[in-house]
Image 1 (cartoon, one colour):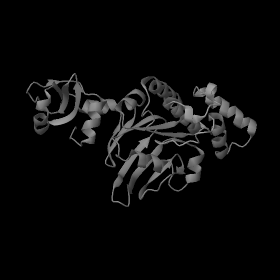
Image 2 (cartoon, rainbow, N blue to C red):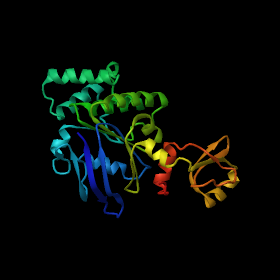
Image 3 (cartoon, rainbow, N blue to C red):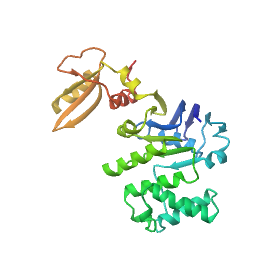
Image 4 (cartoon, rainbow, N blue to C red):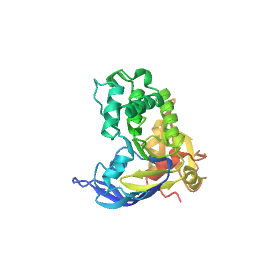
Length: 292
C-alpha cells in the first residue's frame, strides 16, 4: 500500500505558501522528509494526519481518500507530532490505557495485554507506573512512539522525533523506528540530515513549500559527482568566498571555516574536489542551485 500525494497546495491567511503543488509517492518502509525549519514539512504531516485542510490536491492511502475519509484514515494512523503534549501527573500505563480506549480498544483484558506489550516493546515497562513528567527526553519520545503504534497502524508519522535527544537516546530511537518500518509506512519528517542518512532509503527534500527532490539519496549524490569542492579558509576570507562562489555550507573546525562549494569546473583558488554526501545534496536543493 502506497501513500500517493498529488498537486497538494496550502496557503495560510497571512499569505504564507506552506505547500506549493507537492506530489510524491511514499511506499511501505521508512521514508525521509528532509527540510529546514519552516519548509512546510509540518504542514504536510498535519494534512496527511487529517489535522488540517489542504486548499487543493489529493492524498490517497491505498483505496482511502485521505482528505475526504478522515475517520477511515484515523483508524490506521499513528502520529507523533513535533510537540507531544501529555498529562504530566498520569503514569505511562494509565495514559496508554486512556489512548487505547480512545482508539476503540474497549475490552479490558485485550487493552491490558496490548499496553503491557507496547511498554515492553519501547523498553518502558519497568517505568510503567512512573509519571510521564519525570521521563527523560528519550523516554518521552519512546512513549510517543508507543501511543502512535497502538491499534496496529498502517501509516506512522513522526515529526522531528530526535530533536533534543542525546546520542544514546537517538541511536535507540533509530533502532525502534527501523523495526517499525519493516511492515508499515513510516514518514520521518526532520531537518537533521543524519536522521535521514541513518534510517531512510527513499526520501524527499522540501523547502519554501516546494518539493525540491524525491528519490534515493545515492541518485541525488551522483548528480553532484565532480561538482563539490572543499577548502579550509581564514574567517577573514569567508565573505569574499561567499561573494565569488556558490557556497553550499560552512562549518567551523578548530576556529577555521571549512567551506563546501558547488562548481561545474575546477574553481581553482586552492579548492579540492571531494565526494558529495547527503548534506551537500540537502544544501544544494534547498538553495535551489542547478545540480543536474
